[in-house]
Structures are given as structure tokens and as C-alpha cells.
Image 1 (spheres, chains in turn yellow, green):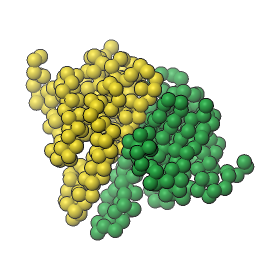
Image 2 (cartoon, rainbow over the protein chains, first blue to last red; image 1 turned 180 degrees about the vertical axis):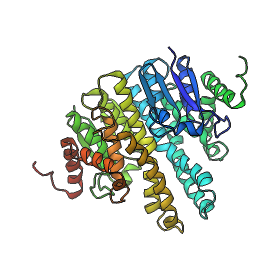
Image 3 (cartoon, each protein chain N blue to C red; image 1 turned 135 degrees about the horizontal axis):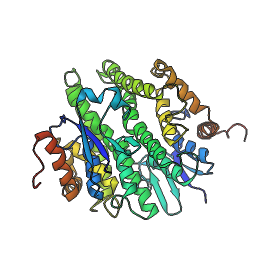
Image 4 (tube, one colour; image 1 turned 90 degrees about the horizontal axis):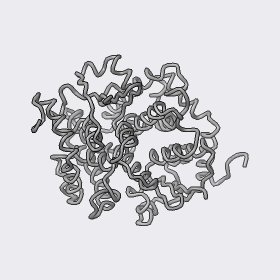
Length: 218
Length: 218
């Protein structure tokens, strides 16, 4: 039986692939696991039925038989543990890939989300414009450190892993900010992620929800 | 051979147990794994030798033979995978505990860190005081959702897990804010975590670094 994930009925990013179901779709495509999608309106996400699956009333969730999971990082990890393609076999390399998963979500993403809060949630405050450069400097510091570590490698460890999948997903939220352009090796890293066939399939599938048209070629 | 972790030579919290090495010490104590600690000054943390272990120049790191890890979430998970006591045996219960690990670090902790940024990093800005209530409302929303889910249970799932260890660690950062007091079941949950013998041993060990005196009873 295929697992079922949840996603926005109408994604606030209008199908740009920045909602967190994209990370799970991408992981499922990388390992070749078919899946079903249940779409939720904003009000349905906050109802008791959905909160039983996701205590914070968000997407995505993942249901498979008796198992219900939330948190995109945990879902990607669950997928990566069950099927080959997202975590190395070698125990040490696997543990390092997991370090990158947590680094993407706990160290790199928070200042990037903070930028969205500064620009969108706090847009109408008196401080929004003045505060933005401070937030962007905090992002720059992280990007500089990540860029130094990546160097001229293709991926964060020897082979593509769930750590790269989450890191690329997080960096994609900077699209249009110009911040990634300051680190050409990170721009190339993100483009490399976007160029993977599994990424494209996942992207097309989430876009099709927004446009209401089936993915190209299907 | 015991693993070696890194910690602050002088913790900015003056031994209150809020630095991220505490999470790793607590996990090691829960599973009964002895460990060594290497202390780092702020300048040493930013040097190339340490950045080879931790790309973002932070603590803690974890070294064991050939393996070097960073990110407290990943280190706690590594410890939990190797020894009994932090993850249930049942596959579904284990996956749910991992969801809570990610929820603690990706969903609950970021607004709490944002409060510290508002109060400390941005203290001297013109907007600091005005912005703080907005940040605290975002924390309140998360705490309310977490409180609803916890209800009158002792732990987030049937038994104490690495998910609780990280969630309690994250909530402890709210000490003194009054925000936890608004959710009595969460205050009791945090106190339950602090009451665990393994927590006490870890707390005393990190405090001893700051005071320069060995932990009581040793």
C-alpha cells in the first residue's frame, strides 16, 4: 500500500515548490516510492482531525498503515531508512549525512525563515525595513560557512544524501534574495539538486496541484 | 574507548545548563555511556581545527574513533541508536519519537531562539521592546499546541524518549520568561525532565566546568 502525504490545497507559494510537502515528495521520488496525496484547506489544517496527525496543524504528514508521522525532517528520514538512495550504507557516512539533515533544519533554515517573517509577517511594522539587513547578515554568515565547507565538491559528503535534499530545499527559500548569488558554489549546488530527475518529478507534481493541470508528459 | 564531546570553556549562560552540550551530556547519562569533554574558548571555536569538526564553528561536537559528528540533534540521535534507553524498540513508536526530535528543534525552538535574538542580539535597536510581544505570541501559539497534545500524559509518547529529551531542553530556554507558567502541564513536563537522575548528573557536570568545582558527591 502506498503511503499518503498531505499538502496544501492552494499553496501560498503558488506552486514554486517551497512548501514542505516538496521535501517529502522529492525523497519519495528519489527512492522510487509511489505515494498518494490528500489536499487540505487552511481551515482543515487547523481542525481536530488533522491535529490528531499533526499537533501543530501543518503539512506535510505521512500515513502508512498504522503509522502516522509529522515533521518533514522526520518523514524524509523515515523514507531514507526504509529504502536505498538517500543514506549511505557505511555507518559513519550515514551518521554524517544525518548531521547535515539536522544542520539544514536547525542551523541554516531558522535565519532564512526569520527573513520571511521580517519581509512578510512583520511587513507593516515600523522596523521591518531597518531590521532586514541584520537578518540577512545572519544568513550570510551561515552561507559563508556552508560555502567554505562545500568547496568544489558536488555534495556535502561523498554522495548525494537526505542531508543534501534538505539543505538544497532550505537554500531554495532564498530564491530572488540575491544572497545565494554571493556564494557561486552554493548556487551551483542548489542548481545541481534542482537538476535531479527526482526533484523535477516532485516539482511538477506539486505544481500540478496549483495549476490544476496534470504534470507535463503524463 | 569513550567518546569525546566539546563544550564551552566559559559558557555564556554561566552554567545554567542551556548550552547545547547539555543535551548531549544528558543523552549520554541516560544510556550510561561515559564520555570525555574537551573545552573550547570562543576563539578556538572559530579556528580551522575546530571548523574541520563543526563547519559552523559551534559546540557540541562528538568524536569516537574515526567518526566526528556535529549538531546536537544528530549526536543525540546517534547515541540513541547505539544504546538502549532513548528510542522505543517498536518501529512505529520509534519513528514517532524521531518526529518529536525534529519538532523540538525545527518547530518549537526557532521562535524561542528568536526571543533571545530580540532580547539580547537586538537589545539596543529601536524596535526591540515593541517587537518582543509579537515574538512571544508566536511562542505562545506553539506552546498551546504542544500543551494540547501532551494533555495529562507524562511524556509525548508512551515512554520517555530522545524526543522528550530535546523538547524539555528547548523549553528550558524559556526559564524566567513566564511563558511556560501559562501552560501548567508543560511546566510539570519540564520539571519531570529535570527530575531525572541522568539530567541531574549532566547538569552538575556542566555546572562544574563553570564553577571549577567537581560535581557534588564526587
